[in-house]
Image (cartoon, rainbow over all chains, first blue to last red; front, top):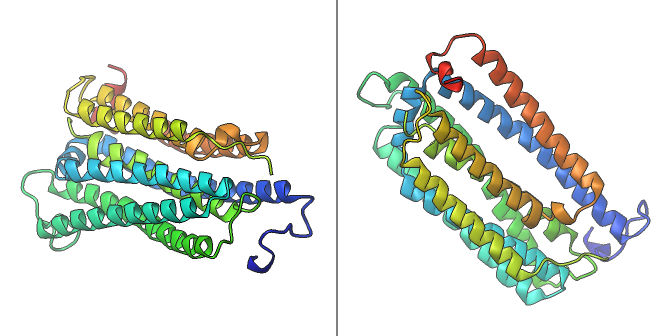
Length: 215
Length: 107
């Protein structure tokens, strides 16, 4: 790809069609991701209906302040990602570099805060397994809530790590001046992935932190 | 390539809207909106706001609003199949009478 980055591969009519094909390919991948995360959400919904009180108990043990801060951080990273794509569309290299660095920083901040939350859960013995400790009648299914919590946020965090890796790769290429107003498909397509991971969090946050709080 | 760039003002506006919606959904979570044991109204409010936020991100940040019909079909197919998974799963479990909370959906 890199040696003829500004050119059109022979199977495409023109750059427009090539760009369209890449975007569509990314969307096809993202739809498989919808199914992947969707299964976890479906499982969560079934169990929250069956064990509402226990899931509410678990939900109340999450740190709403850190969760809210992380939501704002991730939404901010989506803004900077959108601006990085925009800089690429306009062929401004400095803008690409600046906004890619900002997006990476916010992405790493999200992972740091998530790590902090995980550390607190370990200290409070809220990690499912032999060390799980909770008083009251809901301990067993609150543990199930935390299994969902760690599986869903863990898989989400894994996607974030992959995203930060993609951003690092984009940053190196942007510094080398690989992207221009004529060719910016990698930034656009990676942007789609980054925004998708943001959308997953947009649903994870209320599902885990908010929905069952009152039951 | 002809790609109309979205004005920075619009992106910032979308971001501000997303932050406000986040504040709203967190704020609502502190109030008991009622609706039976499952607190259906609280859940409905949280999910509605999440859908609104996701729409803003998908339509503007992900450029779907400015994308081809083919992209719309792909995105729509994803949403549709996700809906099948959730709706059919819940239709099954909720209609079995297994959950004491299920009555909240009708009250």
